[in-house]
Image (cartoon, rainbow, N blue to C red; front, side, top):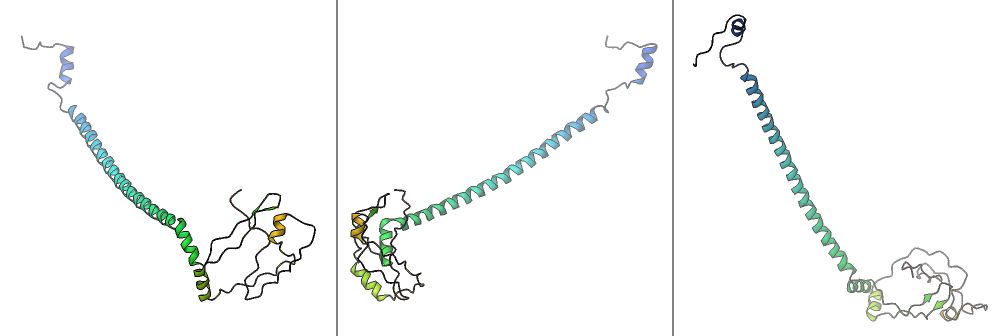
Length: 191
């Protein structure tokens, strides 16, 4: 029963054209294709893995640089905060010979003065330090305007039609400090 039936005629001639055993030629291209696909995939995975590792190294370097810059920024901000502290500002102002200001006066929007300004009281230590230092040479100031500065009393009471009886300010010499300006300094506080 396991015997093959004999072919006759036309079927026998066609059977002779086909190979009798299993074909090795048909398996070779398929095997070669599978090996090439697996090798190409392996090489692609290797390249992808190496590029990811390179990106990881760059990322860790950038994180390290960011951390260093953040630390530097915090150190600089701490230094700025130390210089901006009120006691540090007061100490530096005293080193420069500055003294606390007197009573302030304020200008109203209509031009009237509110309050009576007072001169700043010089501290004894500042007088001794300024006497020990020679005065800095200032460039010659432009000549003062011929209009006399209003006195604090006349400015506090308001504008008057009578001319001021005070003496006109002298133009500053090459060694004297410049005269204070009659017009107020601009403010930046927005009040």
